Image (cartoon, rainbow, N blue to C red):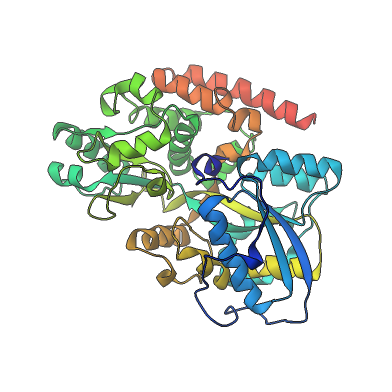
Length: 440
């Protein structure tokens, strides 16, 4: 669950009764647009979520806007953070889950659906249809029923660059893969190492592979590999790995191979945002600016472009997302779940930044700066939208430090020429993980 690894300062285990929180102000003084005012509806909702720190405060504002229409529904939000999957799994096993939760792993949602622990939310589908394109509805659909609203998304198909480095090299953001590789060569010749790779965190490498694979294999095959319906030894995987190898060459990465393997994600961002920069580009999601600890100004210090098209591929976006699910079904829960699919809910968070939404009716003016607005438009206009592949895999294969995909892509970083060998190891580990998941 990669978004947890870039979470802001935690509040700890203290419960946050968001309906009464201060410090966040609503963007309007009246009831939320697109919602039905109901002062007669009452109830209390317990909600466990991954959002901590500033993000928890932003969600408190979402709840505050909801309460303008439903003032007698009290929502008790508990910021659990990165331990949420374990906390929820334990609670489900004990029969005492919260009323609602925010889950960033589709595989975990599928597990809960299979255990009949979650309630379907088909009542929210008409609102989803009005505001979201079909791919977003499919992301929340399991076994034919709607079970989640992808409320907060991260656009992970982005390349962030140092504006000064590009100006020095006389280059502009590319739109195609060939232009991308040529740009890297030009930037290197102008004196700046092209790529800052956070190889100490294996998930940054899986994101690079996944963006290439989506554009070379297409959405259908991407989803098949995500579900292990085809093997990692498939020729489509070899094609993507060969293209990835052209980026992770020692002379194109800050610090070479050994340096990349010792660079964590925040440092990889700092390398690009610094003045003067150590690297010209970092390939990661819309959360990049929030991970920097060096000062840089948007547009003049750093900027961003979409991950380039490969062989004429149509606009495509890989997303990580926070999906809202329900473990119980009450009128109050239905009202809040439905509200989260409205533009008013998205507007309430978007103004703070670090937020993307598949809701096409969230106002572009709600986003705080041109970069955020452009990233949101890319999400809305994408022809293909897929969920982060490794987040869809069993945790032992897709989300464990030093093993499975994370560990093997680090091995690939050490020797990008060993495509066939890495494919075989990926398939061996994937098969074992899926077998273990199937056996419970």
